[in-house]
Image (tube, rainbow, N blue to C red; front, side):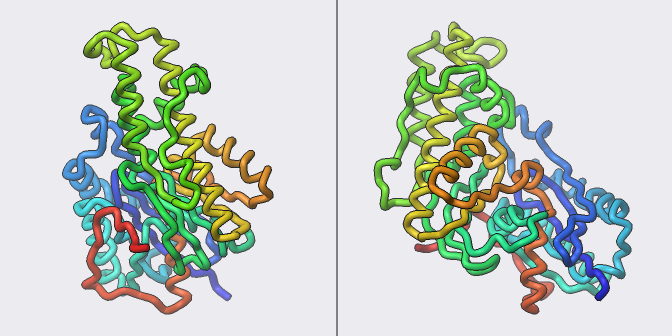
Length: 349
């Protein structure tokens, strides 16, 4: 049986990516163009800037992935693209490119769910199926739990009612005068601090039957702590004025630990509620080393099988577009008038 190939495109937020994936789930090539330098001065992603950057980079990224894979367009079985959720302009660029190539090369079009793809990335390079499982998405835009009976059959269990975990990391990083993207910078600073020196609140952790998250109050607690530990304002470097460096590191460490405790508590609660035996975790925050280590310890103590996406496939990428093979095997293709579904798309309970 000859090998089939899929071109997958990702442009949901601020990464422009393309990958060539064969029918056995092997990633033959991938290319990711980041936009960190474009958004750094705004300390966050600016949707219009992101969309324009995608427009400039989408074709070079696709071309690079194709050339490195050495797979010619005529050998492709389909063109896959993430169509929801995400930023409107960013999604439109990726979908428009996918439609144009599908039409030009006479290939089927497959739209995929970006969230489902993050969990599917946990299975890349894994011999056996990761399903059924509890899927846990922890990223800059999403903090959600799902019961996943199969790659396409999901039930929503709970999620953030305000900020996503990654969003909270970025906002607290700004308060501490750290560069964008805030998550990695804050974790680096936290490694120099004492996680037990400052105890910030763990919102909703005591509500065992509720599988939701809330990080806005935690951010406020950090703001008050900074205000009480420094002089008004920030210095030229954007760091809270008059704050000792150790205090700054302790705040970062205490905040990071509070977030991790919330994430782990709700993940374990979801496992108990569903009686599932396997937890699969994806999304940018899943690359956080402290989170990975502490979650692994918690799961091991409870005999829960834990599968976390490899770090390079936690942040947005096109390799996770391998999910499209699941739709292709079911004959689920999309028409060329397929549209995007922007936003966070929080499923109904």
